[in-house]
Length: 76
Image (cartoon, rainbow, N blue to C red; front, side, top):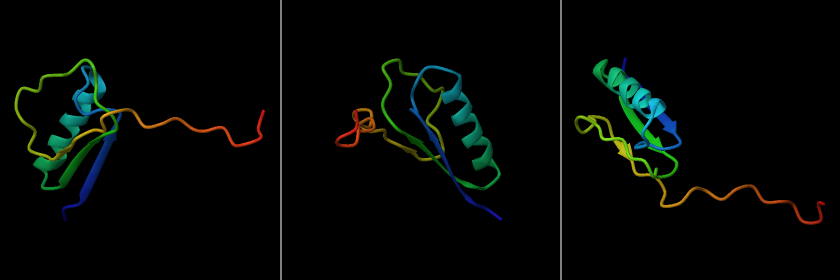
C-alpha cells in the first residue's frame, strides 16, 4: 500500500546534513512506491548541489522567512 508522505524542512536546498538526510529519506520512501513531497519553509544562502534532480517533487520555498510571532496588544 503506497502512502502520501510530506517531509517539511527549514529549506530544501541548504548545505548541511539535515537537507541531505531529507532527500535521502524521500528517495528511500519513493523507491518503496510511496508518493513523497519535500517542502521547504524558506530559501537558503548556502546552496547544496544535488548530484541529480530528485525524483520526488520539491516544493519551492517562500522568498523570505515567515514572519515571527506578534506580541498581543496591551502586553508588556
